[in-house]
Amino acid sequence: MSTPTQRTILIVDGVLAGVFLAACSLFALVGGWPDVVVTVLFAAALAVRRVAPGASLVVAWVAACVQMLLLRDLQPADVAVFAVVYSTSAHGSRAVRWWGLGSAGAGAALAAAYLALVTPFVHGVGVAGAPEALALIAWTGLLFGAALAGLVLAWTIGLLVRTVRDAREHRRRAEFDRREREHAEYRYVVEQERSRIARDMHDVVAHSLAVVIAQADGARFAARTRPEAASEALQTISGVARDALGDVRLLLGELRHREGASPQPALDDLDDLVEQVRGAGLDVRRTERGDRVALGAGHQIAVYRIVQEGLTNALRHGDPGAPVLLELDWDHEGVAVRVENALRGDAAEELESPSRSAAPRHGIPGMRERAELAGGSFAAAAGDGRFVVTARIPAQAAA
Image (tube, rainbow, N blue to C red; front, side, top):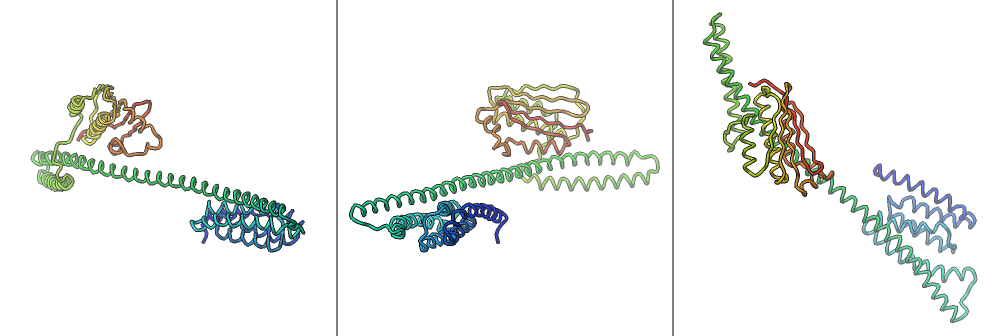
């Protein structure tokens, strides 16, 4: 069953073959029905030359043999042979391709012999003597060389077109595989960061549940109105909260494995982070504008991790001699984070290359996940030798 592409090619080639038949029939009708038959066969070969190059070659041979058996002269339809030989190398299989090259040599020899030896006798021209025989040999060699050069040239052009097409297809597939690999890497990075976020958020929930337990226990002892009902309700809250806290600790133990139980970072830890990066040799210039607003623990972790990853990127891929700008702009809706650094020459070329922009590098997926899960926004862009990370984390009441 033919594919839609094959059907389209067959329709296009059929239309072109029809135009070829109509044009050559004007000359074929002058020669009579034998020339018409030959023209129809050559048109049929053209109609299937791309869909079935092998069949097209067979039909072209049949047309040429019919033409010679009927002792017909050259006619415009014979140019179809060049298109058929071209198609064997441009669209045929390996076997068809070599059959096409062999047909070019055999066809050139057969055509030269037919035109130089058979056609003169058909028209009543004989060989009178040695000079005429030498001229006939020279003429036969000239015809063979011209026919062979034309057919081999058509075959070679088809092979070159095929090579260019295959190279383009190889590049397209390589690009597709590269993008698939990058997407797989991106998904892997995102999953890693989501697992890390899950651990952070579980710690936040655990902290909140601990607060709920403390408040519930206090309220149970402080209740004055209907102490029995209040005590029972608060005791239930305390029991449920303790069960949930135990479940969360169990989840944290399963998620962390060997990572340990280090405390989660907060905004106050940014000072230590900046000093650590400065100690590594990076000139960090921190600017903080506006009055801080209350952020939940998860949102504070998001700010810290984005700043941490931004500074880490600058340390790994930035120009070590240029300062890194860290800006935090506070307003009543939250905080805007901006990390800007100069890039090294090789890193700038790589980041600013459009063909590589989709690569999951420099922790960008993780920072985006942090910002989006906190209800904010994130953007990262490279240009003019600089890399800029911006994020917006909305305000949320602390637990």
